[in-house]
Length: 418
Ligand code: DSN
Image (cartoon, rainbow, N blue to C red; front, side, top):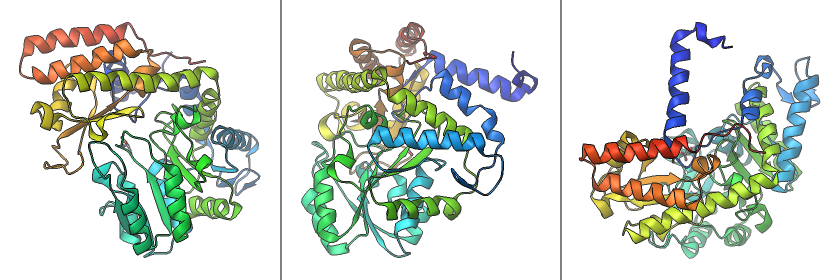
């Protein structure tokens, strides 16, 4: 029974999107599928409620059940990531980062973060963002884009020179592991607070497939909840142990930059965190990494250059322009035609512009949720390269699309993960 059916325009669009998600292969590394339970909580009556404040300290009445939901989300988040404090109210990753800056910095203070062109994120100081207009951002880079190793000595020199109040680790297009201990050592040397923006890999950290920055002594983790963590679209800020920092962050979220929390989303976050505590989720995370490695091997065999030389996580950044003479935008378009969704992406020292860069970025979180294993992922990588090598051959593309649709059909999107 659908009530939405009566709104024909939206209902048709919803059916179209459901079909698109079902029939195509989702390789955008920041996307995933949520369980039916997460979807149910996200679409629940909690959307009707205003709950400014925090559990036990609200400004409006009627909070018996919102308090339960937010408290459960907080407790599960703390347990998953091994920290003392969690704020589950950020509407997404960008407000989470803004709230941390606003909590800990005065206008004009300095943040040292990863350069966007080397894998960092817009919210780490891109000149067009609000934080960049308020605070001073200086950036570090990879030493060599072909190995992906961060220039830690350069980072240290910059920290000594610019005396940042925050040193930021984290990325949206970086395929290698970071040495969290080195960040903490450098931050201690200059008296900076360490913040890890783990939006892409939070799920893999929660599932113990990748190291946790808190184990190396990081002060704060910011993240979205809808990527590898497989929750609803939202954000979260975790503080390892400082009550002083956690209190500042709470005030910074509300009333600092947000009003009423989205309690339906917080309910869905709690459900996703519960799912992330299961052995099945741990296995999922391991498989995400194995699947990315299987794709890496195909690209290496086929002579496609990967930024960082490969991957330690869920994503690959490939220089398709340098390797195959196809621009990132062309690659995104032609792969869309055969039913593979990914995104064009700038690569380090790109000679092309961001709207038609040299690279593509893709990853395995969503297809792994569908049950793809290493051999399936290797085949997807082969089909991607075949498509790019035959981008103008309509018959070939039709044949590839057929195979993609059949792979999608034989791996239905699950409704339950545990
Ligand atoms: N848009 C997200 C991503 O794709 O990485 C980050 O904000």
